[in-house]
Every structure is written in structure tokens, then in C-alpha cells.
Length: 324
Length: 301
Image (cartoon, each protein chain N blue to C red):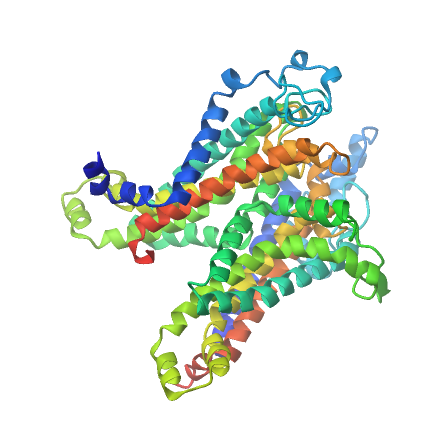
């Protein structure tokens, strides 16, 4: 087990290095950093001095090592567009995206898992057919259209919920949270639903498929024959054995949630990292693009490591394999 | 006729599936409308002389103030909606199909080669695929678009938008093909016909494309349909985000973005008709993809 985790840890480090290299190449080869930082009236000598100061004349490998070690120290460079430190820009936007993502993921799990279990246990019922039909349409409707529809019904027609921005936020030691105000929660509902619906259909379909598989297995038949109560049978015996693939998919979904938050944030003008990334693409603000990529990759790697740890906790076989 | 249909299992199943039939009709209608847009559409929406502000914001024909001249109404510029949509669908489909063609060629080529040669080449291709799979397609496409903006000289940006967009979508969707082609090739490699061809000393390229490829087409065809829907969605999403196509040559996504501005006013048709079109197109392609998957994977039936 320790070996397994160590191997995964080393793999993660390599993935991060690959992404850092990508970000570095972006910065180094897409456009000239010096001409981005200087104006037309800067003299050639000044440009050369800046080039030397930035270390752009150093050997390539050396530059990459310095780039990476700067990143590890939290120095992410400056934005071409706003001239602010990128670290600050990303940090100020991060809470909005993470809160949105976490709530969306929760919606996906809290609704998706029970719905998956239900549709697996009653595969021929009318309710199941209806739910499956809805999810097929749900998968086919693009995220931004779902967002527009929600805005139209709940924001414009009914006027119940705000349709843009975060509403009231409270600053908790540098972390702007919208969890502590009613206004913030109201503003969170529509974007989180938009982001969660697609993931919800994925969760539901996966849980359903796994549940149907497990219900066919011998040990469930045996448990039924032994007269294990239905509730206990479904939720303890059957559901527990569907958890490994479900946790895998949560890990993968986290990446999806972060990526699609770009779209959701654009529809709802949600001031998160995704909106920042979109602006940086529009203005070819390479440092911000690169750092966004590194930050997203970091979250992704982190979540996948946690998922690996959870496997070991959930599946006893993985713990035993070390002994044998 | 009936005997012919019954002999071909796929066709027979098709006649038994109303959802697949409806989807086929919808997809074909939109396809024909898009392909023949220049002849079907009442006006050319790219031609500034073809519309006038005087006709702006007219509702569809069945609403009050609607005129038969503009069946689905007009936008704020006086552009005929039905023409915009047909041309938009045309652009969406062109980009989607071209992107799929590139992604399929690239993915299948690499996947076949990886499966055939194995070893180090296989390891390198699959590592790249793994890393890219960790990044969702939309992020990859946005990134490629951003890089293109940085590299291309400003005067070429506008002209090359369609090309950049197509490449960005293609490069974010090739992984699926590569993985499927590789896995299927591995299975075929152990079959006698491949080993016989190797023994005969046939050229690897010939073995890959003449012998193996026809035998792995089934699963690939399913991915082509499912991913065509993804490609169209991806294009619509990018255009909606304002990263894709500019407003003067709108695709369906751009039309929806423009329509968003009328969300709060009464002009519902500018937003909802293109949206409905996009959904109908994607849903019907997805249903057809589901159907094909069932045909090629009898285990699921």
C-alpha cells in the first residue's frame, strides 16, 4: 500500500512538472515577453537590460528550473494586462470558483446517488423511464443553454433569484465566502445548478449501472435468501460495493466541474478563476493563462491522490494485498 | 425489400426504434438545410445589403406583427432569422465535421501505430493521451485558441478564425480515437490473419490500414457519431464564450450569444429559436450515436 501510494505520488510530481513545462513554454515561446512588458518608446538598450534581468538569455534548462522554483515559492510573475502579481489575481478569484464547484459537486452526489439507486432497483418503472429520458436530454443540452434557461425561468419570468454576480460575501481571513449570507446563497443556486446538472446525470448513470451489476451478484442473492432486510441489503451490502467506481468518477468530475465553471461563470458573470481565464485568453495574457493551467492541474492531481487514499480506506482488499 | 432489411440487422433494428427514426429525420433535415443553405435561405445573412434596420425585431409569422416575408422573424439588425440559422448551422456542421475528420485521422493513425508497434512509441503516445485526458476538452480547446492568438500576426487572425477553431476542437478530441483504435488493434494483433500478413512480409502500413483497420471500424464509428455531437457542442460553447467565431459570420453558438442580449426584453425568438435548433441537432446526433452503439455492441441489447 505504501508502495502504491509512493508510486502515485511520484507520478503526480511528473504530471505537475509536465504542466509546469507547458506553462513555461507558453510564457517563453508565445509572443516575446520583453515586448509585452515594454512600450514602443523603450530603447533597444533598455530592452536588452530587461532581457538580461529577466534571465531570458540564460540556457533553456536553467530558465525552466528557475521558473519552477519561483512557482514553488509562490512567485507567479506579473500579468501583461493589469501589471498585478498573477498570484494575487488568482488567489482573489479562487474562493468563488471553489465554492461554486463544491456546491455543484454536492448537488451531483446528493441527488445523483439516490436517483441512481432508485432507477437501478426499479428498472421497468414509469418513474425510471421518465428519469432516464430526462437525463438523456440533459446530457445533450449544452451547459450554457441550461444556464440561460434557468436565468430565464427563475431570474426573468419568476424573478425569484439573482442572475449574475455573487451577491453578498463575507471576508474570512482573505477568503471571500458567499456561504454566510442569504444573499450569497441565493446568488449561488442558479450557477451551482447549471454546473451540477451535467455531473448529476453522469453520477446517476454510473451508480445505476454499478448497482444493477451488483444486484445480479451471488452474494446479494445469498443475502436476499438469508432474509436481510431490504433497506440494509440495498444501502449497506449493495451500495458499499459500488463506491469504488463512484469515487473514481468524483475525482474525474472535479476536473469537469472546474473546466465547465469557465462556461458557467461566463453565463452568470460569476467572478471566479474561469472568468479570469477567459479574459486572459481574450487579451493573450500569457502569464495568467499559464498559472491558471498549473493551478487547475494541481487541484486535479491533489483530488486524484485523495481518491487513491480513499480506495485504500474503502476497499479492504487493497490493504491486505500488502501482506500477501 | 423487407427481406433485405431483415438480412441487415442494423437496418432491421432501425425500423423497430422510433427514437432513432425521428432522430434520423431531424438530423437529415438540418443537414440538408445546412448544406443547401445558399439556395434555400431567403437572403444571405453575410451580405450587408440584404437586410435593413427598418425590418428590425420583427416577430415570427405566427405572432402579432409577424410577416410571411420573415418566417421566423428578424434580429435587431433586420437580419432574417431563418437565413442566419441555416447559415449558422452550416458553419457549425462544417467546423464539426472537419474537426472530426482531423481528429479521426490523427487519432486512428496514432492509435493503430501504437497498437501495432507497441513498445516505446506506444508508451509515448499513451502518456500524451493520458495527460490530455486529464484536461477536459473545453480547456484544451480554449488553450489552443489562446496560443493561436499569441502566435498568429493580428492581420491574419480574422481570416484564420475558422481554421484555428477547427484545429482547436480536433486536437482536443483525438484522444478517444487513439485509445479505442489502440485497444482494438491489440486484440487484432493476436489474430491469425494479421500474423499471416506479417509472415508474408507485408509492409506494416499495408497491414495496419488494409488488414486491421476494416476490422476495428465498428467501435470507431460509434465514437465518430458521439464525438460529432461533442464537436458541435464544443464549437457552440466556444462561440458562445466569444472565443470562437466573430459576430459577422455567426455559427449557432454566436447566434445564441447575441440572443442572450434579448433575454430581458420581449424578443424571445432571437434567443430561443437558434437554441432550439442547436438542441435538436445535438440530441438527434446523440440518439443516433446511442442507437449505433447498441447495434455494434449486442451485449447491451
